Image (tube, rainbow, N blue to C red; front, side, top):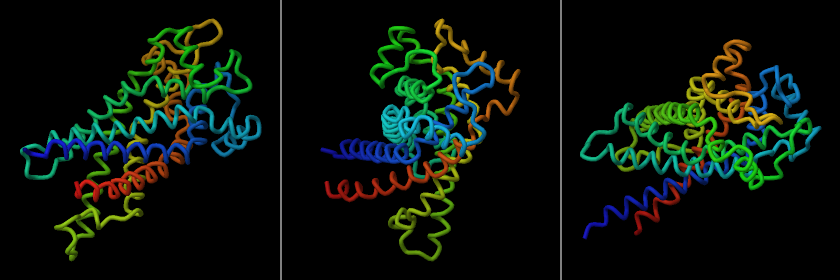
Length: 315
């Protein structure tokens, strides 16, 4: 009896495990910048319960001074949970899609198929994780200036949202979230895979390792460069979706009416009052967070995967 299917399933779970470990490490290190980014994104300068920050550095020091470490790590638990689940599921679905597309193909996957694999994974992950990201956003936006009763924690946030706004509120921002997950992941992973091929081909010239295992040619510095470069491309092209989603996921005011009704409303209002700059609010904090964060993610992911590969070969 063939053991190909069990081995394939095991390999997919190894990718999921490596992705989850990478996601946890990323959030643990970079979360304060995520808080700053979210507060910049939703502050439209008109109706806001948030303090005014001059720049990223000022925001970090102001939050630390007025809210302490707790403020800098607001929403940390759903951030860790969401990122760990997201990366775990993303790598799992991404690897499954690549394997499906690779069947009956002798050549390597084309950039188009890498793009399709990443887009498919992003869409699936978005449906699973949107409620977690909504709660994270709500907790990150709570400040001493907040006018409504604050959520006491993750469970209280879920319970209060369900009671006050209904189940559908957990999926506010799902439309820009889908566009974000599909486009961002597709761009990032396609860029990563193609740049990875370039580095492997460059390093393999004159090397005897290439034909046996090209992964041995790459080290943590290579993974860091690949992760940061591919993330930079994805962030610059997809950032407006993050702003739109964050604004939709804000907590309604005391009268229960959301600040923005839907995606089109956010786009119209932001373009009208803030122009193109409004769609890129918080991008400095985002780049400071995501460039090194993506490096950490791929360093952890690739190295955890290498640790798991010997176990797979010995089974």
